[in-house]
Length: 326
Ligand code: UDP
Ligand code: MG
Image (cartoon, rainbow, N blue to C red):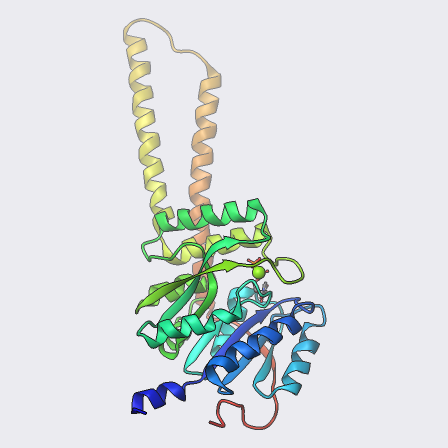
């Protein structure tokens, strides 16, 4: 066996799973995830289950699994930090040569690890899951998600692939670059695309949630969308000048119309049209101010330079981890 083949065989894997109130699904997840990892890495893997301030018994379940299997570790955050930060907290603890990220609800099939690994072994740095269909999700969720990715594609210069989540396998160096990006408003899938290297799509059919309910109601989806757009684009700021020009042109047209009326002896009357114009202009100005505010607020929060997350406890068996023992 050649040296490179040996190096490949000895490669290790870290799996990151963010968990928020998933008590009903954790057992099923571990049941499918462990064999998928064993199939590719024997025992050279660690599974990091990140408890993102769950209010159910998720943490208890995580600790039970960690006690039973030394390859599983639990990381408890001090409170709910949100999916993207939980993911970043997990990434910060990984030590494997490859990092595999998936959701806890089995919407992302762990069995795809083998296919993704093949892509990485043939030269890619990132293999991301691209959804072909989404089972068990409402037409509303599918519709808004489709609209979001298409809009994002128009606004953002970074090529963020459509219909992807955070389900992906990446090399150590991509994970390290990701961790070196200090921003607070994290749209992780976009950040990974921004990093570059060779990234390939692996098509999959997204299953319905195994148990429980989505933690992405419309409010959170909108917040994620705002983070995505403001993190990767300043186009909305330019929107202000475009809107200004548009209203300038409308104003000019209106002025010539009034001027013509005056010259030809007619009178232009009507406070209603005036009021409408004032309202229109006022709303346009407020809208633009709001967009400025979004960016300004984010800049303010970034300047505080607070840590992104707080880890309350790492629960793993006291002996050396399965990975560092190798
Ligand atoms: N999640 C999290 N913190 C949150 C919300 C969600 O860690 O505040 C986790 C959740 O447990 C799941 C993943 O993020 O593993 C994706 O969430 P969900 O399945 O609810 O999103 P959807 O698939 O509906 O977009
Ligand atoms: Mg889900």
